[in-house]
Amino acid sequence: QVELAESGGGLVQPGGSLRLSCAARGSGFRVVAMAWYRQAPGKQRDLVAKITGGGSAFYVDSVKGRFTISRDNAENTMYLQMDSLKPEDTALYYCNVQIVSMSFRDEYWGQGTQVTVSS
Image (cartoon, rainbow, N blue to C red):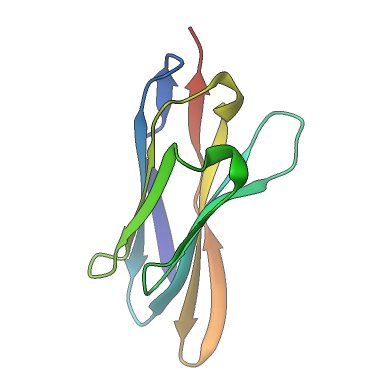
């Protein structure tokens, strides 16, 4: 059983910063890949950034140069540093974790953390 604990969302003014975290808790699994998604009201859930176990990162064009994804493999924790935030970054942010357990792959979603960018 894997549980994801997200934190770090909030209200920030345009140009401000926030740092999200997602911790995968449990035992008997190995984290393969981690990613952040976001969903704005009335829109679909979209990928924001993802990172492999080796640290290779991918970003969607709209956040390149502003967001930084990182992970602590020892703690099974992923972070998303968000700088130069814009109102269009307002959304519910979800972490996604892909794991391997007893040779089976599975994925888990966090509960979501709200990010609101507004003056």
